[in-house]
Image 1 (cartoon, rainbow, N blue to C red):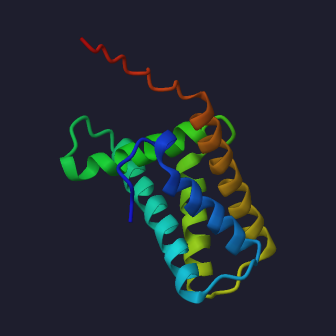
Image 2 (cartoon, rainbow, N blue to C red):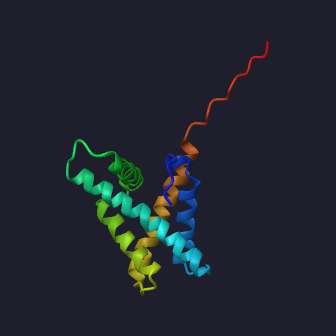
Image 3 (cartoon, helix red, strand yellow):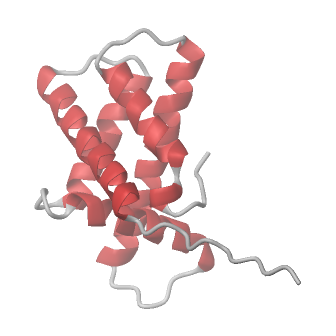
Length: 144
C-alpha cells in the first residue's frame, strides 16, 4: 500500500520505516504484521528502483504509470544524495536485504548494519522534511 501524499505529510511512510527499524533490531512483531511492514517498505524501494531506471535511461517522456515511481525515486534520492554516492545501488541493496529478512533468510551483520543505516537516514530525512515544511496558512472567515 503506497500513499499518494507528499512525503512530508505521509505519516504512513514514517511508520513503515519506524516499524522496519524495530523488526531489524529484533523487536517482537506478530508474523503477519512483520510481513506486511517489510512488504510495504520493499514495495516503496521497488518503486523507487523503477524510477531510478527511468532516470538512468534518460527518458524525457515517461508514461503516467511511471510517474509515481519517478516521484518516489526523486524523494528518496533527495533524502539520501547528500550522504550516499550511489543512491540507486544503495536502495537496491536495502531492498534485497529487506526481502531476505521478510522471507526469513539469514542476514549478515554487515547487511543488517547497512539496512539499519539507510532506514535511519530515511527516517531522519522524513522527520526533518516535515519539520521544515511551512504550515498551511490559516483561513480567514468573514461573517457579515
